[in-house]
Length: 324
Image 1 (tube, rainbow, N blue to C red):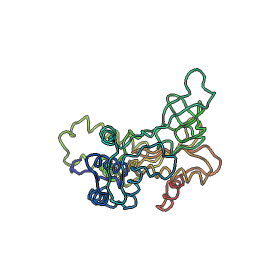
Image 2 (image 1 turned 120 degrees about the horizontal axis):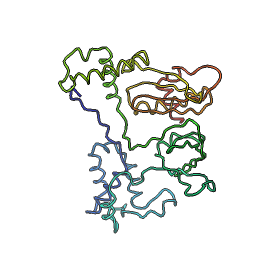
Image 3 (image 1 turned 120 degrees about the vertical axis):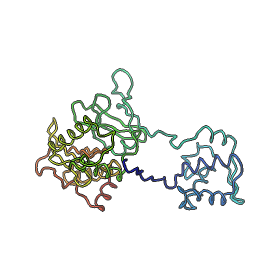
Image 4 (image 1 turned 45 degrees about the vertical axis):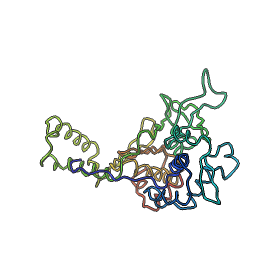
């Protein structure tokens, strides 16, 4: 922030939903020639590497050529004359383009329900979960919704069936409305800044007037001292700190303190869950945030969990996370 640096941006690569929207909108204004439209589309950065076969598949979808009869209920939006290559809009396409803007027509939410016949008085509905939360969940996982813990009994195309699991340690749900998470380069800068604070180098130099307030400095130094007293070393970009303890029901909790953000931690957490399953056959709860990873491992006899489950090379990490 002091240097005025900006985070790197990562434009979406070949977003076909936006391509479909723009194609319908453009054709609703005037007829399009497919080859000319393809050339124009590729002048925009997100589609500069768009393969022609993918472009044609998108036009097929918009003109009603679907891969199976399961999609027959969807009305085509365009007419594509393959002899002339001309795209024209069907009736209603212009209104659809104007009223249905945006790239998330489906919110990607799963209904969380009790099994049929097990509701007491009222609805089976318990709540909703984000699709990424569901993707990272497995049958028999314990999750928290409201003030109650629930065991996942079944995951269907758009529903999660649960049964009560009172008193069980559970994962907290997340929703992607929280944002994309901290990028790694920002996490590294935050980690570097924490090292400066821990070494006392930051306050020994010239600091901005808005930060040179006595109470502010005392609070920051107090926070750093509290962290050092708790973990022995302040986590940062050069030092990642690992804690191990038991929770209230005797399961192991392993906490990794890292500033590198969810974009690094989430795939790492999937790989850690895969390694724990490979080592102990346990479906561990592994949760990632911008500030680290927390793994819960059921109490088992034998070797205690240690830093080895977090130490993965690139190949192992990719392989384990892909399996999850």
